[in-house]
Length: 533
Image 1: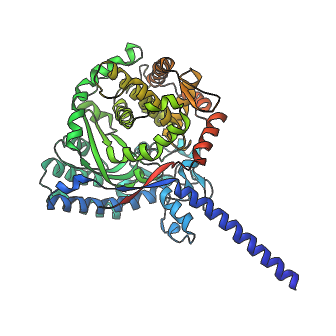
Image 2 (image 1 turned 180 degrees about the horizontal axis):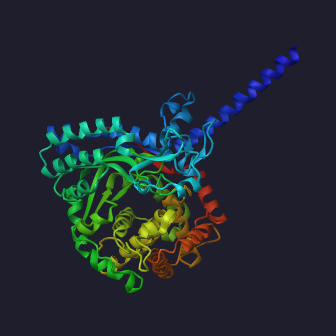
Image 3 (image 1 turned 30 degrees about the vertical axis):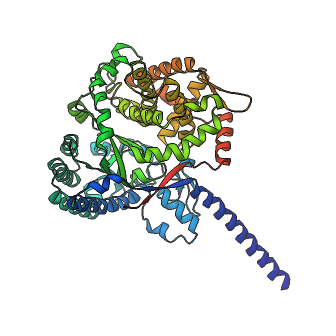
C-alpha cells in the first residue's frame, strides 16, 4: 500500500514538474512579444466631440474583436476557462490555441491542428464536396459555408451569420456619424453601416477614398483573407483607429503623382506594365491608437494599403497608411537589435529607422503597381494565382518597394538615406519577417526573397556567421526577383508559383542557426499592445 502511495506521489510530482516546465516555455513565448504602449500626442489637439467619436469607434472595435474570434476559432469562452496564466495569455495573443508564428502549432491540450479554413467552413468539409458545391456565392469574400439540416453545404452571408454583433457595431458607427463635424468621416461611417447590413462594400470604399481631410480615420470591416488558408477567399473582421500626422503626410504628398512614372520603371517587359495606377491615391502617415480583430493577432500590422477591390483602385487609386508609432516600435525593439547581431560591424551604420520607414512605405505603394489582370486570358491575377496569391503579392510588394526606394534615391527624391541604408535595413528585415513562420504569407514571401537574394550573391555569411552585403549584386538580385514575380503574376503561372514556393519558402540550415542566435539573445519576435488612451 505504501509503495502504491509513493508511486502515485511520484507521478503527481513528475506531472507537476512537466507542467511547470511547459508554463515556463509558454511564458517565454509570451515574452517574445514586447509590450508597446499605444498612445499619441495627436490626441491632445482633438475637440471634445472628436474624443466622443473615438470612444464610440473603440466600442465598435471591441465588438469586431469578438467577431474575429468567432471567425478564426469559435467560442472565445473556451479560452477564458484556461487556468494556467501563461497559456491563457498566449491564447489571447494568438486568438486561439495555435501559435501563429510557429506555423499554427497547437499549444493548448485537447486541440489538434488548426483547420485550414479556420471557422469559415465546416471542419469536416472535403475537397470533393467543395468542388461539387454549385453555388456562386461560395466564392464571395462575405459568406461562410455551413451545413443545412440535411448535412449539405450552404452559403450564409456575413450579415446573417453575425447579425447580432453587426447590429451593435452599426449602432456605434451611427452614433459616431451623428457627432462628428467632418463631412467625409460622417459620409464614410454612414455608408459603412449600409455595407455591414448588405455585404456590399463598394460605395463605402469609395467614400473612404474620398475622406481626405479627417484627422480621425478608421479601417473597420471584413478586409483581408490571410486567415483562410484553405482558399484565401474569406475575409476577416478587423478594426484600426488612427490619427493623421499632417506634417509627415505633407512630406509624402509628392510621391502620389509619381505613381504612373514608377509603374513605367518596373524591371519587366512592357506588356506587364499596362495597368495605370490612380493618382488620387493617398500616401499618409498616422499614429495608430487602437487595433482589434485580424490586425491584432500574432504579428502586428505597421502599414495599410486599401481598398482591396480592384474596381475601386481603378476609379480612385488606393490609400497607403503608414502607422508611424507602431513602425518605430518594431524597428527599435526588433529590427535594430537583429541587425546589430547579424550584420557585419562595418555595415551596421546602414541600419536606419528612416530606411525602414521608406521600405515599408513603398511596400504599400507597390501593392498598387505591377499587374492586375493576366496577359494571357486567365482573368485577374488573384483568380489565376489561387492559394498562392497572397504570398506572391506580399513578395511583390517587398521587392518592388525596395526597388522603388533605390530608384528614388538615385533620382534624389528621397532625402537623408542611401541605397546602402535601404538594402542593409531590408536584409535585416527579412530575418525579422521570416520569424513570422510559414503560416504567414508575409513570412513565406520573405523566405523566398531571402533564399533568392542569397543564391544570387546579394549577401553571404562570413566566418563569424555575420552577413556581408554585396551592394552591386544586391541591386541585380532586386531587379531579377522583381521581374520574376511580375512575370509569374502576369501569366497566372500557379504551377510555377507553387513549385517555386515549395523550394524557396523554407528556412535553410544557416538561417535556422541565425534565428536561433537571435532567439538566444531574447530579441522579441513582435509587439503586443497596451492601449493607454
